[in-house]
Length: 182
Image 1 (cartoon, rainbow, N blue to C red):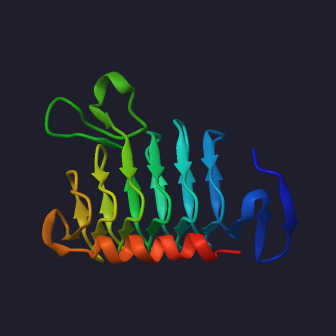
Image 2: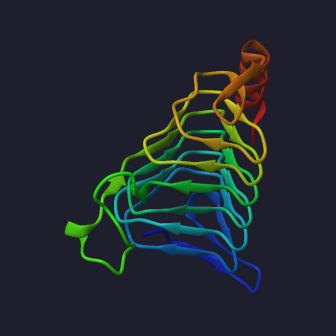
């Protein structure tokens, strides 16, 4: 796990400039952290399979990553306040019924990885369902429900593409940042 550098009433500060504000809850031990990460207060992240958080990522308050399936978020990406990333869910379309209180043979659980690639931003209170990949540089509008893969550098409301981000501008700004960061 991470080496704790400093702890106070407000946050825990770990090696590699990782700051996790209280009260947040990280359940499990299957985490991989980059550098320069902020996880805000009241965040819940559950790991049964690998949870990977890249460099310069921000996970805002009241966000959650649950379900127990694999999740990765690339560099310079973020989950805004209240986002829900769900890596497993009961599929009630066929034979399954119930919930986690019912033995698995009676349920139809869909577990699938969720991937958010570099430079992607997920808007406030959005929901991302199992098996989705958010392409590099994509932007998802607030309140979206994402049920299928999104192409790189698009601007989306739910699964519907409404525009394109300025890829060249973002990459120029990134290169400038990398040349001048402390």
